[in-house]
Length: 266
Image (tube, rainbow, N blue to C red; front, side):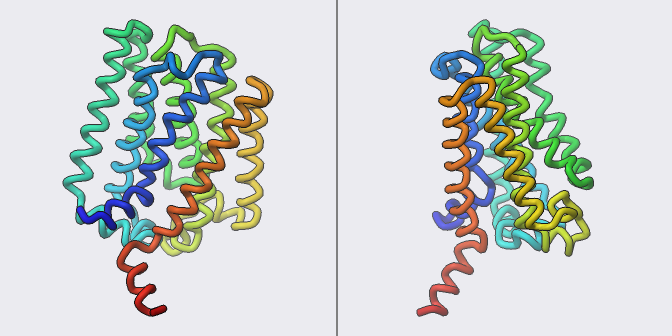
């Protein structure tokens, strides 16, 4: 794989988002009253699972992907086999870490083996969820929020509690808002592909306000439950996402188009 292609896929497959999910789990631990260092291998669960989910979703491809992300779609097809191998390794790694926590570390229980499969069930139904406005946002928000709480509980002696439910709700608002934020950017392509999202219904301006309100609501939940330190860390997490999303937009058209534009300017 060429370096330029690898860099493009790193951003456009949201691999950076998968890696940052470990920080999300660490913040969740703080919010639930545990030292993030005690989570240990539980910090690997979210990055491994979301890498599998995001690569699998991108490999599937949709009609709107052909319109909104033509270069990404082309590269995903070119490196189809390699991406499949890496996502399979990520899934195996995720299941192995869960088993390690259950059978060796002793912090998780056998029921956690079943809970660990819930995000995969959501993934299996995601193609159906994407047909309807808001359901894709709800599905993604639920999955991210669930994994953030599950990773902490599975890796520590902590039990599910009201604090965990509040952390779930805070992340749900924030991650569901993130989906709608991406939908705003894809309104024209989604419309051309006869796909309607909540952002498409509301329009870019109203949808942007709605996204900001959801994120502010999520931060407010963390502020109310865990205080200003954790809420500040959540804000820092959101700022880091903004930086990476800006970099992702810069890589949106791919290396070939960037090269051609540079040549045209020269």
